[in-house]
Length: 439
Image (cartoon, rainbow, N blue to C red; front, side):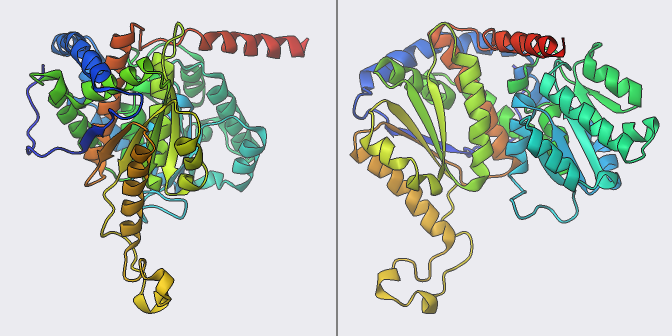
């Protein structure tokens, strides 16, 4: 292993499984799977020691951040808006990072607004370009393989829009930066043709595991965030888990054991219920990681995302009174004492007494607690995560926690967490259909 990072002893977030052995999920099932994680943890620790997985070395890297910072500052100096073209692992992690400081209503005043075109949609793409100030927009184009059809198509449309606006070839290249693996591919060739900057994507780091690399750290730097802190939080969590003397002291092993034991007990779906807008894209990132890494050979559990409190009004009825086939993770940002205060004189109706003088964060914290408690009351298994301070270090810690949890779960069910063979069939058919339509 690497030398431990210098950090205080306190935990970045807290995990409680007190209410997991509830209903169909039993203590015995959890204990059995937790015992099995010891071998998986040992293998992962050996890989970390041998530095054979970039997933476990990237948290300790700083050598690449100076170059990224220089690129980020040039982009910030040249534009007022950055649009990320990418999908899946090239976009969901950066979106989770952006939610640390961006809301639908704004972001840091001295930084460009960072937007994401992650889904290929004809109307959405046309509308985005029609309303985009091209002169003050920089496009960050990310694809590990450099051949992702959706991303290539988006970039070609952007290039056409720039040409239609009168930009010459060399000027077009100044409007986009490419992140792709260091070999000849479609994206790198386009960058070369127009003279665009290219940053290398580690070829051994799959897209859905790449959030701590340039894929996530460059957008973080553009937003003025501390990219080193993202990695520092990940390193702390990596050490906490791989140095644990017992699996019960490794939170990721505990989480993986609970999830796989739940499946063993007839609970094939797992819900992440995050209380706060800033958790919405993190949950989407986790959903891809869990689904694409574990869903193979008839195995895996189905990840579902919910955002509180709003989804109490759209999903909770089903969770409480519908099929008993789910494990729940309730994530609480410890919002008590945060946000605007409801003036007492405006809530002077006796029926509003519970709101008078309360901060908005008090209400959200109470709802996160009550949702978890109500699920327990209805005999649903509930894991609780509490994050006292949600910043770059905490988010990096969560990225690594869920990465480890996924890798450990893969070891428990015997699947390769790094491939996605079934997805390739659809890509091949898409290409065939498009070629056939041209004939």
